[in-house]
Length: 216
Image (cartoon, rainbow, N blue to C red; front, side):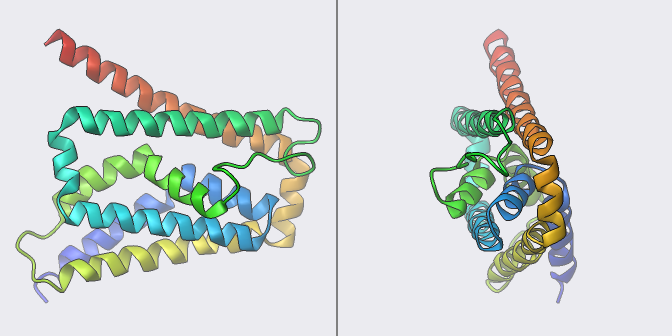
């Protein structure tokens, strides 16, 4: 059990990262409060699947390759920034509508599928990209036996399911839905603003990276 401290450390890092409010929380909460518990849980499934994809790529060394191939990593982050801004604009438009998304025509965050909304949001989330391609790679135990890696995948899957599933259940309760309906316009505007701010922050980081690289 020499690798138990590594597993505990990775589990703690991942759980703390998941618990920080961000795009994943926005998407799961939005679908749960404005649509249904079922749609909220479908969004959770998308978040979990994308999280597992991230961890498998990190374990396989793809994260390290992305860091080495700087242009590819920047391109993926640019796509993520564009997607976050797109989602934010859709939420802002819903909030500025006649009644907000709770009463009016709500935006579909990724086509018509809550599952795909969860997948795309997690894959494009700059917090996820930084975590899986840097902090997570550093914490991975070197030369670990084969059982460690599927254990890490299982930990991430279980923790993601429990945390985001809990959020979906909470936001889909009668009290939470009624509160959302009363505050729909303002919450849509707030969620949209958060998404756009995250996208613009990532885009600005990319702009500065490109500028520094060009000047060097």
